[in-house]
Length: 457
Image (tube, rainbow, N blue to C red; front, side, top):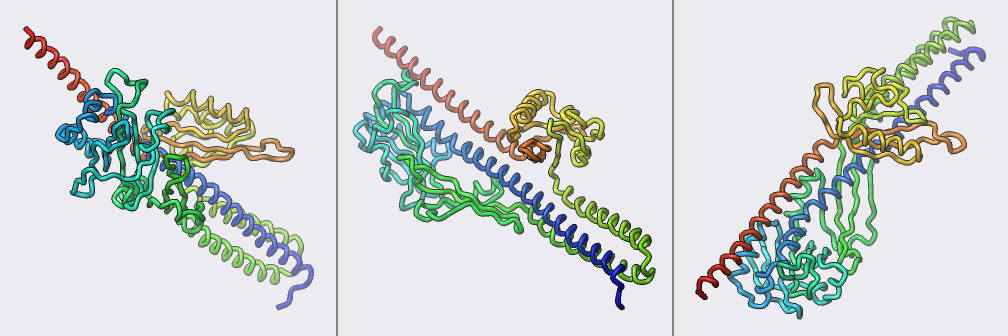
């Protein structure tokens, strides 16, 4: 079957439109998927950094609160092993540390204990450069660094020892106190469960060529964090591997849906080919069919975009002045607001009353300064429950460097907030335990004074 030139030209034109449209849809969806992938990566990195900081607070509290204590000063002088067992060894489990070292002002080991599984090893030293260089405590009386040993990487917290009446540590150090947490496989496995990923501590010489890596098609990414030594240089690195199942599924759906859409186009063009041939060379009828094909193309594109809205993210856009002018179906479905409720700044009425004013101030400042937008707030779901979200937004430039619109997304971080609250409760419990111990020691001191007075009488 041969088409005439007048019939073939419209057909080829529609074929070109179909190919260009498919390419545009694919490129657009890959762009949005990449932006979503980057947003989720940023949220996971932020979550990792905060949880990593929280996991070391117990050891930091141990080093700080036990080193302005008259009994500790006396222990440095006497080396009373029984006192150490009763007062320091108990801190291994209470403060979740694996090792304790106490040195006198001359850098000589007074006491150490290292927990190795079920076994406690005493009087074993590791290379702690800080205790050989007391000048490191000249600026900071409380220090934090990492060290790589033959047994692996240690997270070390150090402090100078002072009397009880010198909490600001202005007197000369009466000794040095160090705690260590071993970043071993058990630590990595437990921490990996918290962050829903996989971590491993690497020595510095194994990561000289390491760099952050990501794979959009599999939804996986890897990044590294430096663990600085006492001299400020990297002593080791932490490798963090994450996989985002939602991104992986969306990437697979993109390929599948593009194939479906291409099949729809080809089927439509094949049908059009026969229809145009059968109806002949009537230009008006061909134009009508072309319009119908274009309509089908738009409908197919609309159906394809609906897949992206199933990700659970609350994607949004505003005009250059920060006003919502277009419908945001995901936001309406989550909050139960109507389109008229959301328009302008009406979306803020779904925020928690304690967060609304702060959020609007941050948003208006970002719009005024044309800078990126990032804020955490609580959003009331349609059933009345409040969920925590991380809102991220960036301006999109038009011609002459003017802002054309703003685009962004809201990521549900309720689970991350729950972890942070649990860690905060744990920290408060440790602080309460320390206060009880300090009060007990103060009462013992007062009791000893009373006993001495009675003896003199």
